[in-house]
Figure (cartoon, rainbow, N blue to C red):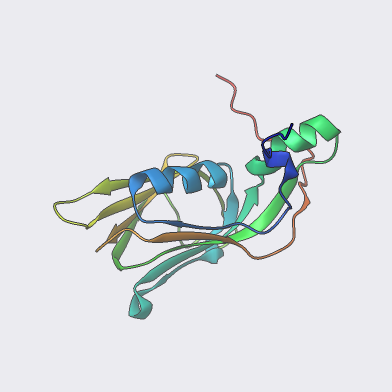
Length: 159
């Protein structure tokens, strides 16, 4: 008798995910929850119509495996890009303080009349980034090997 493959049977490989609709973006949102990034690693490339973040994301996809094998939690540097950008607005962020480290809580898409809409990146501490797009296309791509999370713990959200 054969068994179905489990998640743990898969080989570890860098993530590369693309979102073209709200459901796809929910997967990316779950993976970037609790990602941290210096304010200097947030770029709007107006000429390329692209918004990009270099994130230090917690490897949520590895958490249960780390728990089972009693090994260190990991983070990995990832680039999240949003394409087809028309404008970017932010609130609750002091762009002049170059030492600021931001923490991502969620990423959501609010569709407009056609394919357009707004991607909202909600940050801890009441900050938010609104990325107005002509059409949703977001990419999350790991760009380094995983490293041991400096805190040694998984992020916690007590109620």
